[in-house]
Structure formats: structure tokens, C-alpha cells
Image: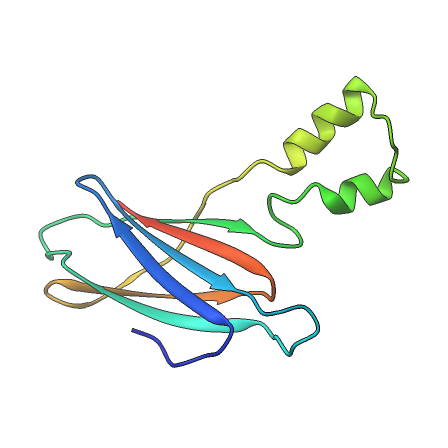
Length: 124
């Protein structure tokens, strides 16, 4: 499925309506970690079926309110407007991920996973 790596973990959960593939790039604080790129192949998608991939990320720039809170001056008490802004900044947003059909029942996609982040790819 992908090459061996000490910091990148991949696991999948399937249901009747979709398959969810989680990629996690994590290490003990202070230990080496870099961005990882994974090429993932998934079997069980017949060529007669339409497959759509949607990617959701939690990293430094996606679904992460911390940088905005820091830019606000790290307030101990938030205004209602600041709370609304932070909620918006922490919202997960899906983006389309290109997939490639590599055989009659297999697809492949490539995803980069920054250090200390999670990517969830939902195949439906």
C-alpha cells in the first residue's frame, strides 16, 4: 500500500456507503519528523462504479484555530466575534482529491501529509 515509514501511519474504515482512509504523520516531540508523501492503492472499486475522493485535513493551515488566536494576541477572554472567527478557522472543509484507476477494481491516489497532521480521504 505504501512504503515503510517510522512516522506515517495509515488505516482504513469501510462502510456500505464509503471508505475512509486516515493518514497520520506523528512522532514523539523532539524526534525527527518531516512531511511524508503516500501513494495509496485501494482495491474493491469495480470499474462500473463511480468513485469520488474527498480530502479533509487537520494541520497548520487547515481546521486549526491556533494561528488565528495567536494573531489576535492570545486573548484570555474572547469576544463573541472572536469566538465566531475561531470556530470558522477550526471547521473541517473537504476538497476534491484526484484519483487514478489502475485496474478493473483498483484506484490510487497520492497525498502529502505534513509533520504533526492528519489527513482523512473519504472514497464514495
